[in-house]
Length: 351
Image 1 (cartoon, rainbow, N blue to C red):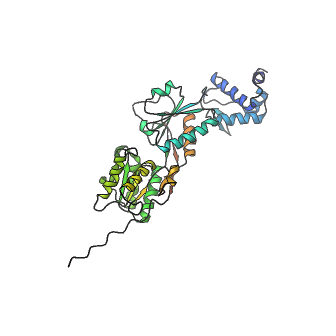
Image 2 (spheres, one colour):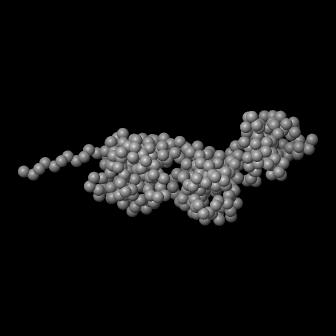
Image 3 (cartoon, helix red, strand yellow):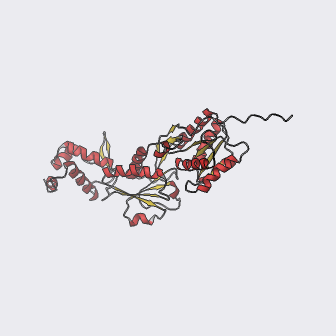
């Protein structure tokens, strides 16, 4: 039998199931089975290749994890995409100093190791570097999405982008709602917001405003502040703007933990006590956020689940209309929030 002899001629040190996966991949590459077609049943493959059914079953499970096959109990194993010779994913972001990206890259790298793939982190926005490096798939930050630049290779964006792009996002609406509900329960009604992005490009602000309308919190335009976590002057400016107000906000919601940490540092330098004088929240729940001198109240979502959903979308069937996977969020309450300070007592009239 030709197929069986083909397997036996390969190195005997390789697990039998990996030989089966290699055989199935070769058959797909050669056009024997095309995308959308159904493979023969496990019993047929077992007889055809003279291997045990558990070896075939394990091979099909491995191919399903790679996104090459989709197993439907009532139909069988469906070919969903042609295998790549080697899975090389590029993670592209404008600034790799953001700890969030480092945490997500670590989880993606662990998952790719199991798929015998590799991950390359790229700082900048020069997409030509992807092809020069032989990258087969890409993960990009939402800042790098452009309506007029179609992606040349399968791409998933982290964060909210156009409906026609593939993306994996945290449940921002729920996360911002939980923050506002928590602050309202403490008695905060005057709330400021700090972000590195312009208002029109900031979906976090949009959902924060929706939540504020429900909780009747006040977030006037003068309290929507721009700051960059790498720009100490802009972070100091956030604290100065808050302190200069006659009736200042009692809480500050930051776009992410990275910015919140930078603003908390500026507050300390200006002698503003957190949270006694100002409650601060973040978003992302970075590892370091629980280790600060004043641990940060923030929104958590799983990096592992995010990485798994990125690979699910990236390696699965590609839709021209794009697809979005949402990761659940949960509020983590720590010491950076507390009830607002009491209003100053009225002065005694001079006599």
